[in-house]
Length: 358
Image 1: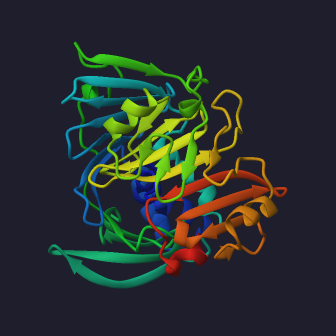
Image 2: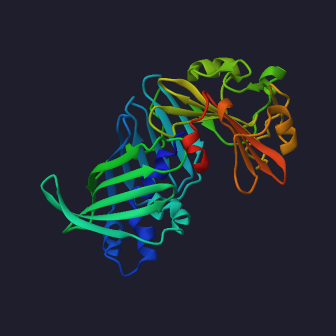
């Protein structure tokens, strides 16, 4: 499924910084310096055939994402807060936000495996001479960066996700504007007047009394408890209750989290529920382990032998034996010390071409 748009933007808009540290004498260092000298950047992000998202980033840790449907998100790293606003429904949600300043690149830790940047022949783009750089691997992306020959600032970035499940869609970042003076009100965490406000921490919420909602049964290719694949976000919330958290990860999709029950549901705006994840408890302040079972009686904590006994031999297992897939069921199981720690379920059988990249 999709990846966090903010992470993509943080990575790609300023990818030169991390790479240049690894290649201090390369021409890419000039790109690094040019970007870091800017006080703001706005750009357009288009992922595959999705409608574009407008992004604004300041060097003081504030950012704003404007979605095609009119929704927008404001993040302020200095205050560890994020505000999501839905103008059509006049709703706003204030959340904890632990990511650092986007100009400080939360993904620098993911750039440590980047070993080379290849310069490309100069080209003309929209009447401007541009220099190109090819970055083979950046946090699961293959990236091409085009910069103005004179300013060394990006004019277009193309990123192809090579990991499993995204079908090779290309993300384009363009329409860059640097050092534009942006109204401070665009970045305020104060919700609009008259909006219904929901403030969220990531603390554990009370469990439902109904066992079918508290510990639901998951059936591959069907759904979880009363929720079926293909249902809308509104239908999910009507059946499971108000979620602990809901966030937009990519345009046109919502990640609905019931971390108090160890459940994450990914909903596509057009296609409905596409993926269900059942996770173990890893942080006492952020959730509980999934307490339900699959329709064949598998629950978190079971062994690999238990899973094989219930579902047969997997269609694919990674080299370390910590992950097993059942392609025809659109299902995967992850293990630690031979104990099941998480399960995920897709709305349809998996394309076997992507299995080895999971």
